[in-house]
Image 1 (cartoon, rainbow, N blue to C red):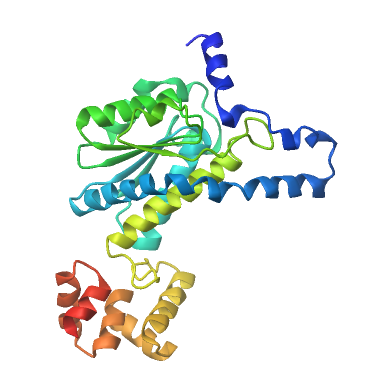
Image 2: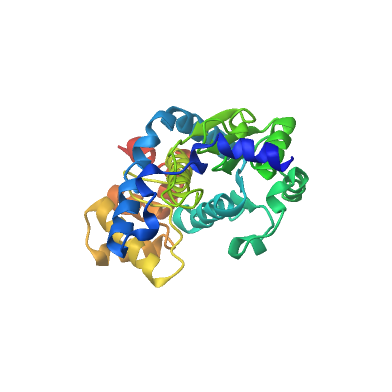
Length: 306
C-alpha cells in the first residue's frame, strides 16, 4: 500500500482524529491532564452498548466451539495483540482450562509482547503461518483485534480462518475498519478520538480489554465454569488462590472456614466437588458422578439431587 493510500485510510478513522477537548494538552498541569483522560475514559463503556448483540453472538459461537473441543484464538498486533495474550493467560488460573484452550497470537511473536517488531503487522502471510503452527481448524473461533480495523496481519488471519470454515470475529474501534467486513461476526466499539491523538492504547485499548473480558468470561459462565457468581473452577496454584478457594466454598455453602477447608481437602482442592459435598451430604464418588452428568454445572448437579 502506498503512503498516499495509507494516509487516506488514516484520515477516515475516528481513532486517528484529533480530539477537540485536548488540543491544549501540552499546556496543562498534571491534575488537569489526568482529569481530561478520566473524562474521556467515561465515554468508553457507553460506546460498547450497541455492540452487545454481536458480542453475545460471538459468545455463543465460542461456547459451541468449547463443547466440541475447539479453541478460542485471539489475533492482533501491538496493543491489540498484547491484550489478547493477557486475556488468554488469565483463563487457566481463573477457570482451570487447558493452556491451549484460549490462545493469544501477536504479530512478531513473543518478542513483540515487550517491544515492537518492525513490519510484522504488515504481513498477512505471517498470520497464516502462525495459525498453521497451532493447527488452527474449523472447530476453533478466531477473534481478530485491531483498533484501526485495517491491520494486514489481522486481515490475513481472518481470511485464512474463513477459508478453513472456522467462525471468525472482528473487533475494531472504527466503523470503517475493513476487518469488520472480513469476519462472520463484526464487533465495533467506536470510542472516537484519543486524548493523545492516535494513541489507541488508551480509549480503544480500554474498549478492547472490556470486550475480551466479556467474551471469555461469558463463554466460561455458559460452559459451567461458574456457580452463581463464584469462580468455582479456579486453579488453586498458590497460597492466595487456595485461600480464595476456601472463601468461595464458604460463600457458596454458608459454612465456616474449617468445614470449607476439610471439604476441599477431601475433594483434592476442587471447589465444585467441595460445594456438592457440603450441600448434599453425599460421598465423594456420588458427587463426582453428579458433576459429570451435569457436564460440570454445579447448579444443575444440585437440582438433579434435590
